[in-house]
Length: 354
Image (cartoon, rainbow, N blue to C red; front, side, top):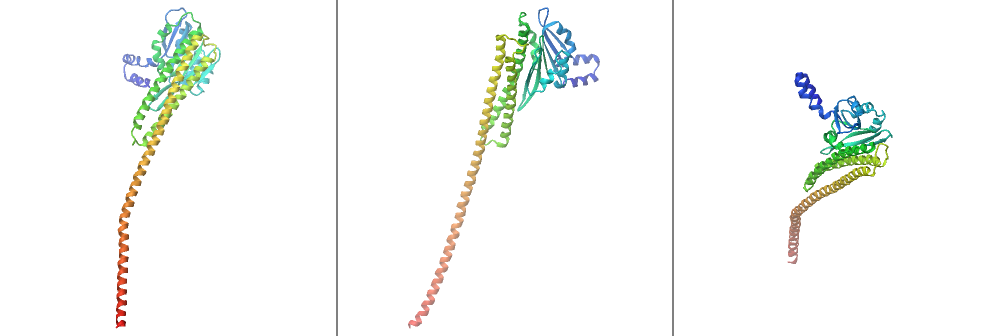
């Protein structure tokens, strides 16, 4: 995305301005390598644009970490891996899995981990490939994943702390553990964003008259995002456990270094528990929402019952006078008829009596 505007600038500006404008921009997307020299001394760093830029640099290194950001990991990862000496089937085997993968082939090891980004209730998942051989750790990811690029700024200081006397498996394990930890920490940060969204939903639930039609979809989206996020944590945990207990030839046998991998597993388990707790809170939120909805229905029913009561009273008030009027009318008519009948009978009996 950042390269297209640069191309437009190149077509309209002179060559002198072209270099001053475009050089700083793509550096964040350039590949980089941090390595410990064979001859010893401080770690060295090198940037490049393709695998061939690093071949001689890797030959002069005892242990190296090489990171490649790409636009399309499915198309470019295999080419990069083959150029750096990995088997052609390793990358496709990793990418064919869902979210994460672990491939141990004795002389080379392949991992795939999920990199998570959260935008409100949308969970974006991108793969990070980690390919390992005895003297190289190669990471490949898409350009939108910048967590390893940030780590590269102080990667040489980190590698400077690695003791030169350690065997290759120990050095590889130390660097690999740090890379996985960096990815995990960035993934964990996005759980806080989900927590913030959940807090906003809680505020909405405080209103007993909150519209159910607006809150219910938000709770569903939140719960769906949590499920997607939990999937990535479980996938990461599978890879870490395989790395810890898989007994790969390229991974250390040192109990101290394996304990570091165990710490990574414990961190993921804690965040899984936290995410599941949030899911339970959301489930209770759905129950609260249903209670609010039931209360709203009960209030409506009560109001309808009150209206019916008043209508009944009004109907009764109208009906009683009508009933009394009808009875009174019939009584008067009966009385008049009885009086007239008695009068006629009396008049008929008087002459007879004379």
